[in-house]
Image 1 (cartoon, rainbow, N blue to C red):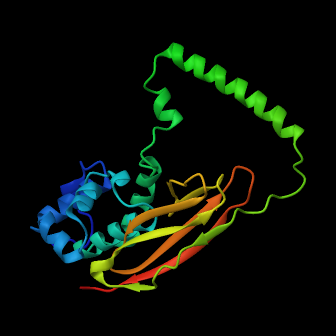
Image 2: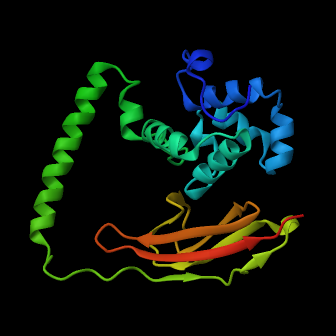
Image 3: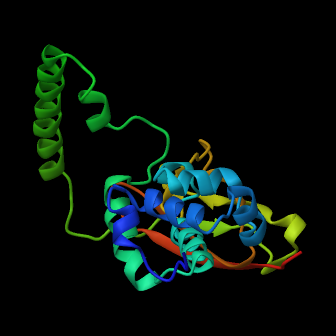
Length: 224
């Protein structure tokens, strides 16, 4: 089969975008290892795409980029696939591997849920009281954000780079919307695996009561 478009008769029972891509790959007689070698994308990442496990992929622009390259290799229309990807990303929302309150509550007994809801209400009332007791007429300045010099171009073998810098101790820092640890003195450091070609890193620092401080860093990774 020439994979120029999704064949509704052969994949009508596929429930996810990943299943559809896998069926097209199978019909093209391509193995994951072959696709991984051609696209220079880890086989684990390709398996995650076919299983719609987007939380197993690097965050931000990497998910869209990997899927778009995979779709192009299979000969599919990106304008057809992109809406399906966006719809699934709303369900498989990328977050750090920290249990959220929603995820936690769904696994607890009903009584515990009532206790937590009660505590939340109490905290909301306390927070509102404190909020209206503070001076809020002035806009809080964004926190400091200094990025240690990053190269604009790296070789393929050096595509694992360390993003490091300094911010205010109380600030929350994220890279491509993924939160990273910040030390008590405001220093932070995070390794990032880049892909061949152009990579854009969105580095953001913000506090609970401030506007975000955002910097964009572009790094180009040369091919082998």
